Image (cartoon, rainbow, N blue to C red; front, side):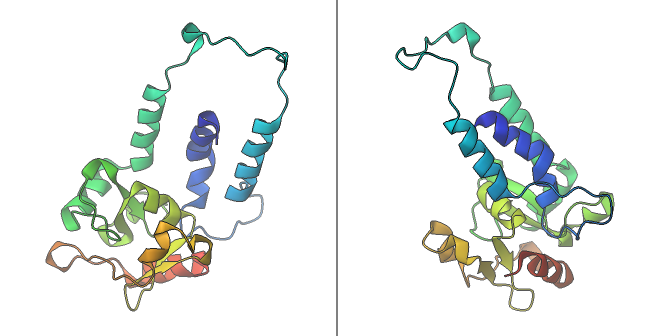
Length: 192
């Protein structure tokens, strides 16, 4: 996916895919699915350009936009509420699914999607590695609320994520644990 499409997706469309989203009501526009966004990006890549096909385009270093600041800003936005993330870091200290302790790679994932400050409760959150956070938000990963084991979509079979299936969730310090009701809500929305 082109970087500008990824950034557009993260700022415009990703919040609507956050796990636990309720069914849209009247007048609410449903954003495109991830499959639609990928298909659109692939079509854009395949579109012919105005360049002469017999001549290679000239690389102009002065025309390059420095996207590093934009990417850093997007990562900060995605991490969202710093206080919520800090609470999850204190409660869990590691990725709830892999045990990863590299703080810059860990994100505060809402189990029931963010709906204001009331949803920033530590029991409505999981500290997840960034890639797992995205998969969790897309409903490709979830947690069985009764056994606290990881559920993996069949779409991830044959990938490195398939090995997470059935693994126990890594609980936090002093018995910190996510809300079973929130996990049940996420699982139902994920269809896992």
